Image 1 (cartoon, rainbow over the protein chains, first blue to last red):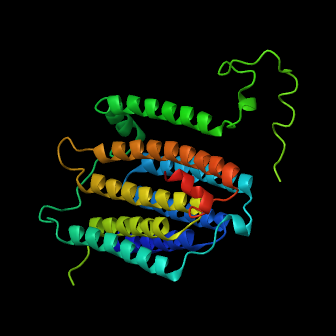
Image 2 (image 1 turned 180 degrees about the vertical axis):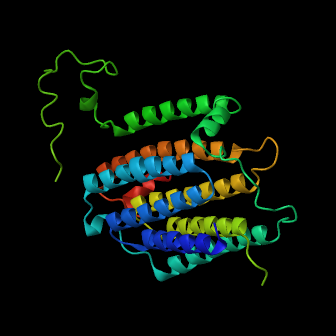
Image 3 (image 1 turned 45 degrees about the horizontal axis):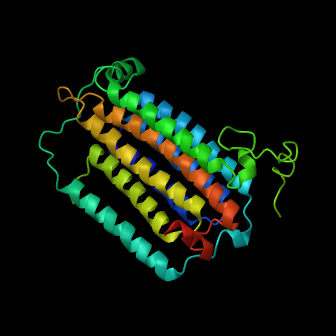
Length: 196
Length: 110
């Protein structure tokens, strides 16, 4: 892929990212983030990472963005619930910090060793699902299994966080020693009522 | 100015995306947008790894190690978003706001 096209796609990605971090309306931010994620998937395709490009679209563009839009619509934030705009001084400091990060990384890129770079000739297998899977399930099978532990921990954490803090939400579960004098039919009522 | 090569262009785009995410995390007060900025930073790191994976694909024993790392990073990102958004919902239930600087949000910091 010519360098110019990479830079063009990069400009679209960065522009969408800037829109994401500057919009007040969260749904606008989420949609422009989708554009940025799609651009990253395009660059992955250009880099012969076909499987990862598919994963980027499915996992980021599908699962994660759906999660974001779901939560945005679940909360339906009013203007006062999002907090005021940060003062200009905060934005200046944040911009300086971001520029600092970019400058450091760019310095590292510009001064690294290029002497042996030639666009390596690749077999057609590089990045293909078959090739990738053989690599993943042989050399990296331990880390792959550890990811399942991570996901299990995340599921447990989400369940704990999603629970209501009051005792009534534990009613009828094994987590609580239910007091015998309480009416078991009274507990469910009012649990799901919408707060004002 | 010397001519910019394609791997360097990829790394530049990745660094710029990461920097945009840093700006979002530092400047915004809406917790949802802060989470999205973290996702942008992760995407910058992922793009950098994919670029290096392509660049050093010809070295022996190096094929696709970067891509495997990216897949792990995606799994971590998915778990992180699920946990982060449930923290957002739990916080919103308590203080009716997603402002990270809201007076009652400081209970997260102690």
